[in-house]
Image (cartoon, rainbow, N blue to C red; front, side, top):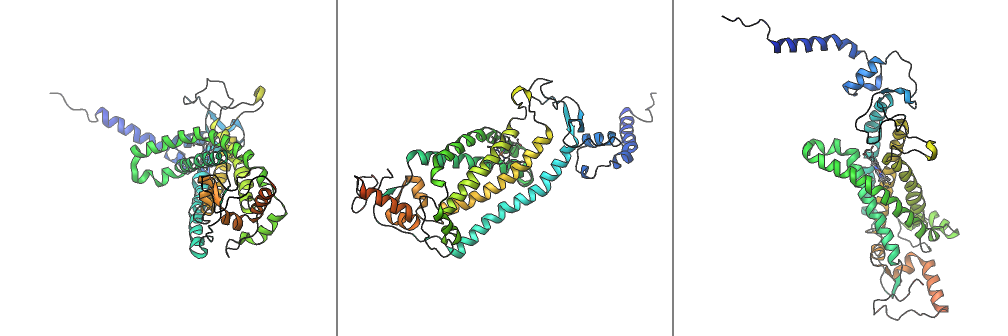
Length: 367
Ligand code: HEM
């Protein structure tokens, strides 16, 4: 009769694994890196083996563990850091990005629309003015550039929010098989629309630059807060000071920040002319922090812009959709511009058509 062995082969294997884990348990508990708490097992092991080595600094390529990363899409040896698969700063970056950065950015993105809604309930929209002929405010090209920038911005904002918060707020209730598609599509949309947004922003900058230069009248507008709360109409030129601030702080400054940091994240294998520059993990982590800060401010600012351009100022949406505004609207919202137009047309060949436009052409083309 064949006797069954006391310990089958499976039992022996399980025993061996448990014994090994128990033997390493105190060692793992001794990882000396405070912020390594949520680190992956692999990283814990590396931190453990490096625990007595001096920290070379997060910016140093020597702070990583050499190990070829098979996910790289360029040939081996292209970048100095190419074979650094685990970098100590990576864990600090993850802890900061998923912690304070996500909490502060998320709070701002919730509080700002609530604030705008509260403002709308308290102050209501601007007075609606109708009457007179139609005035051309934006040409077809200007509207095309505006909407191309706006649509690419919205795609970037939505896909960016999914990349940033999706794992926390979507994955738990929709599950991996659905969230997988959201994450994948968001990532590719973001990567390809990003460069398109840069082109649109540049066109926007040059198309609207001249009309956004500040002048003395803007100071009056700023001092009276644009008359937003009391619904006063402070005389303004083609663009008022609020619109100019949006142009310089939003489109220009934040656009530049998003462009530089976005391109760094999009092209991590970039090398400067003559290999003078090279992307490192450290630089990418800094770019990511700045990209998150810039995105939060830009999206918050854009919410204000969208409110003022739609329900906040009746008539404004029509001007960007169809290119024209009522004479009465132009007079009350942009009085200095209106006076300039009337003056120009009075001294020039064209005169305003009485009773508004009958053939679809604006009575006051911008000329
Ligand atoms: C102003 C518009 C933009 C907004 C609102 C925006 C927003 C965001 C947000 C919220 C993230 C997620 C950050 C994270 O998860 O840590 C992100 C990631 C990223 N953004 Fe943008 N971004 C904008 C423009 C750009 C541009 C112009 C580019 C490129 C030219 C770009 C390229 C990237 C890349 C490559 C990532 C990383 C994606 C990944 O994790 O795979 N972004 N963006």
